Every structure is written in C-alpha cells, then in structure tokens.
Amino acid sequence: MFRCLSLLGALLISSALLSPLSHAAALRELQGALARPWSLAELPDGRLLVTEREGTLKLLSAEGAILGAIEGVPKVWAKSQGGLFDVLLAPDFETSQQLYLSYAHGTPEANGTRISRAKLEQGKLAELTVLFTVAPLKDTPVHYGGRLAWGPEGALYLTTGDGFDYREAAQKLDSLLGKTLRLTAEGAPFPGNPFADVSGARAEIWSLGHRNPQGLVFTPDGQIWAHEHGPQGGDELNRLEGGANYGWPVATFGIDYNGARISPFERYPGMADSAWHWTPSIGPSGLAYRPEAGEAGRGTFYLGALAIPGLYAATRQGQEITGVKRILPELTERIRDVRLAKDGGLFILTDGNPGRLLRFAL
Image (cartoon, rainbow, N blue to C red; front, side, top):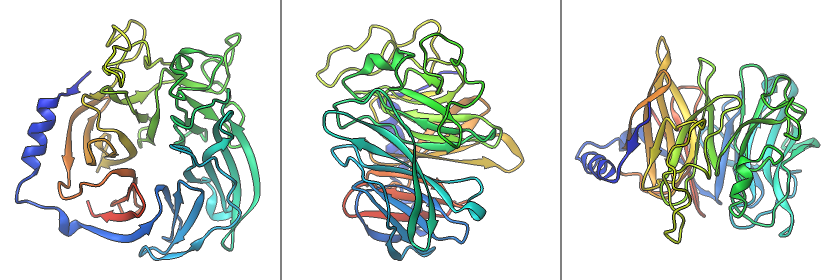
C-alpha cells in the first residue's frame, strides 16, 4: 500500500512532537569528538568500530571512549560525498576476525564504490583484499550508495548510487550504477541472481532503478528494506524484491534542483511503488529495525535524516508502512547513521565535524 507524508502532515507531526514531553533522559552522548562519522559496527565484546568519511576507522570502548585509530585502512577517495562508508562484520567474525569496508576509490576522472575485506588483528587490518569495484567508474564525487548488509542466505548486499550525472544508468542492466547488488562473501555474483541469464546484464544486480540508497537492513522474517534520497522530494522507503525496478528516473515524486520536472510519471506500469515516500525530502540516512516481540512481520524502522534533520520512526505491518513520525524533537542535528544495539537500543551517529555518537534506550 502506497502512502505519502505530505508537507502538511510533516508540519503537523513536527508540531505535535514539540510538546513538553521529552525523551532526553533516554538519550545520552557516548562520544562528541568524531570527524564526519559515517557508520558503525558493534563488536562481540561491546566495543565499537566507527568509520569516518575522510578515511579513518576508529575503535571505541563500549562506553564511547576513543581507544585509537585502526591501522591499515585502504586509501579512499575522500572528496565531496566520497570517502570511507560502511563497516560490516563477517557473520563468523568471532572466529575469523574478518570485516568488510565499503568506500569511494579512484581519481577525479574515474572513481566508484569499492568493497574490501580484512582481518582485524591487534588494532590493525591485515590481509586486506579488494573484492569488488562498482563499474562503470564515473567522474563525479557524489551518489555512491555504499551500504552493506548480510542476507539470511549468506549473500552480501551492496547499494550503489547513480553518480548524479548518470541517472539513466539506474535503468540499464549493463551498468552497476543505481542498483542493489547481491554478492558472495568473495565478491562474485551470488548464485540465482535475477538477471544472471539475461544477455548483456550484470549478474550482480538484485534490483534496479535507485538514485542514492543509504539505508539497508534485513528484518527477522527475511525481507530486505532500503531507503534512498530523491532529488527535491521523492525520498523513498522500499521493500526490495529480486528483479524489481524501483523507477528512478522514469517515475519519481521529486523534481530537479532547478525546479524542472524530471519525469511526467510518479508511478509507471511494471515498476515498483515505494512503501513510503517523503515530499519534501528529509534526506534519509542510516536504517535500523526493531521487531515487535513475537511478531515476525511487525516492528519499527528507525532512520536518520540530513535535510530535515532528526530521528524518524516508521511503523511496519507486514509489507506496509502504516505511519512515520519524527521522534526526539530535542535532537536537531543531521543524522548520518542509526544502528540497533545488541541490547535493543539504538546507536546514532550525527553528521559533521565534530560528529557525535549517541545511545538511545528504547
């Protein structure tokens, strides 16, 4: 079911949340001196790994103290939106000590999103191996996607952006721009991908028609959800299905930054509607999911926002999003990432330099 958070609705929700009731007691700062943090991972012992966009991987204690910078991080292309993106632990991290990094790689004339794997050993990355690089490379320092997630079948999923100037590539099966990719742990196409037998298509593609997805999470019932930035309007939260086309730039609720229409279509036959969209854009970034106890198909997505800054909660019932609201009105900073902690709370990274690491007890 398709739903929209209108401008009037957004204003009404914001007004309702600016009430004397505050959640500040449940929100606390763990660290306030990070430099443009982008993502984090919680280690089995409770310590945290935090990526910083300029190319640093920080190790923090469970209480948020900076223990140091991890050595051996691959060189990143840190320009505009480019840099070090996601950090994802291997499913068998406790025994293998392996982790995966996504980052922008290359030069001003030829750059793209890359995945590397390494082993974390005594504060250093060892056995660094480049597994995958998105092609074609592009000459723009924006719209990389870069979110990683493990699927229940053991596949490694990666979101990719359209490179901004190459929006039409999101509809092309011979390009990896504007896609969700499904890979093996070694960076090869995962067996059974939907376009593996299509002539001229890239076998890594899971879904297409994306602009710049920067939130990706699996729910306990095995569904994969992602959100992506629209232009001016048309940010989306989608339930992803293999082989589905999510429309960009053929169908969009957004307009271009100069006010021009990108497409005459808000929906298009054969293309998937979003579960929710935001107009005006909130700039979604980071995505976590907390299921309801005993309810496999019900729960709440938590996401940050960069354009209308704050933390948002989206209520899920099965395949539908039944409502979205902004929570924590006292939190007015740009939010870069939101992650579910092992204890059921949230880790929140604010964007900027300095950026903050926060804990929110749900």
